[in-house]
Length: 214
Image 1 (spheres, rainbow, N blue to C red):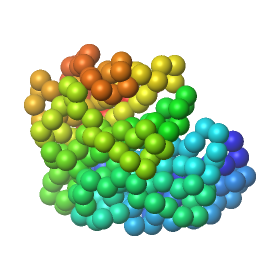
Image 2: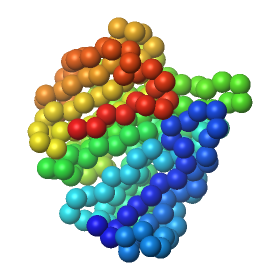
Image 3: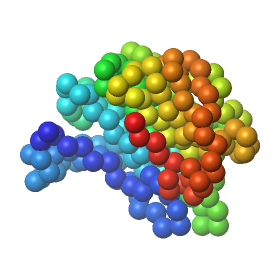
Image 4: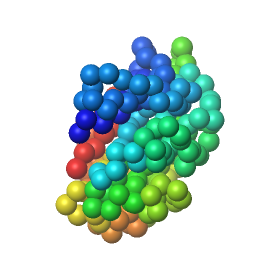
């Protein structure tokens, strides 16, 4: 528990945005910190750490909130942040906003990908590139999930795998079509999903709040 990782930047963007400047690490419970890289990844949406090995961690990088950049996506480190590998890249406009690791099987991960860009006059929110990806080999290879999840123009997404049941996965998805957005649940590890709640209260002000926790 003395090993702590922190990602910088406002990953829930609005009019006033704090720029991301990479990832920091503490090995003494937060008394002192060391910069460990990823300074060009912009806003950090989430960090997950292997439950048995604090040197293995994954970073969800949303990217430069003000314009396209190739450093978006999911990064993996196996040496505590000394070196990094970009293991999931969709495009220079679509980055990772959320990550969830199966605590019973840390080789299984889910990543939420979102196209977001802040302009002085507007907020670009969503594209057909976004959605949920899954890895079953420790983050080296990924596949995009469908099986009932919204397609077409989708926005911010939150994802969580149950710590009690590895087959149960929740996805909170912003979508252009009202009949597609909402809270989804899978009971087969992401093969198929069913929308279980369409209440708009779960999705309003999505830039801030689209998060789901198991």
